[in-house]
Image (tube, rainbow, N blue to C red; front, side):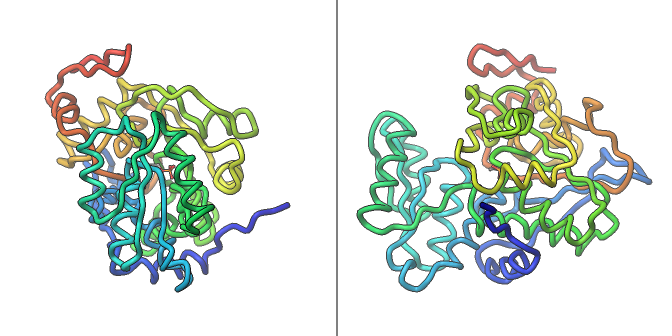
Amino acid sequence: MTVPRPELADILAAHQAIRGAAIETPATRSVLGTATAPLWLKLEILQPSGAFKLRGAANSVAMLSPEARKRGVVCCSTGNHGTALAFAARASGVPATVCVSELVPQVKVRAIKAQGAHVVQKGQSQDDARIEADRLVAEDGMIDIPPFDHFDVIAGQGTIGLELLRDLPELDCLLVPLSGGGLAAGIALAAKTIKPGIRIVGISMDRGAAMAESLKAGHPVEVIEVPSLADSLGGGIGLSNRLTFDICCDLLDDVVLVSEDEIHRGMQALFRHDRLVAEGASAVGHAAILAGKVRLTGPTATIVSGRNTDMDQFTRVVTGKSVTLGNLVVKGK
Ligand SMILES: *Cc1c(COP(=O)(O)O)cnc(C)c1O
């Protein structure tokens, strides 16, 4: 059974549909590039919700039927997807519920509520929050909007690829932070349709990278989650992944893994040289280039995917202090 994938027409439609919720972001030059191989920064940190996930969430909300809009949307992400869905739902007057466990700190709960979403706190784990979200879908008819493995989400993220190749048709390589693969799948579908020869490189941290491990295994696998400077890249891809695994398998030219030390250095470069405040996930392109794991051979863009960083940790990194991640100490420089 083949599952339909977004086509260029779906991504073009998404680009219209998300206007008013998400913005078109600029691409600016990084000091890391060279004259013949400029490096462009696609500034998704400028999205009103602080990350590109607003594109996929806004498109998913826009595609709801009038009847589904009344029932409302639900998710169980406390990260950038939860914020994005709350933002997108509020922008189009759709009720949104975010299910979280009782362990989620009240600051996070208040932040989601501040975006106008209803928060349901249930149980002691993310799995308990998931069960509650499933119950709201089954009993109240709410529409579940997952963070990556969803046609409209992928089409929404694909609008980044459209904008990049419209503004910079000379690009021959795109560096894409990779977690569940919605971002990479959407961008690759758009970019490779417009310019089949373009290279797409997914970049993850070297510990607990579910998509990278799954691509190596040839099927979705579970990984043990460990704390990372690129915390937005954590989490699994789902053992019954429907779309992003196959699309990434078909369309990614390479997957590169970077260490926490390398991400630390990438975050410093993004801040000290490019003068941008961004989360660790946004700096994996810089990390890979500085580590010599990606070579700049022609016009390249890296997706500076979000800015929703813990500012205490961010300050420690950019001022050269060490950071403790579980039992790993990342030495400052
Ligand atoms: C979600 C996220 C990613 C990864 O996107 P996927 O679609 O899960 O691969 C990268 N950067 C940031 C800031 C994110 O929030």
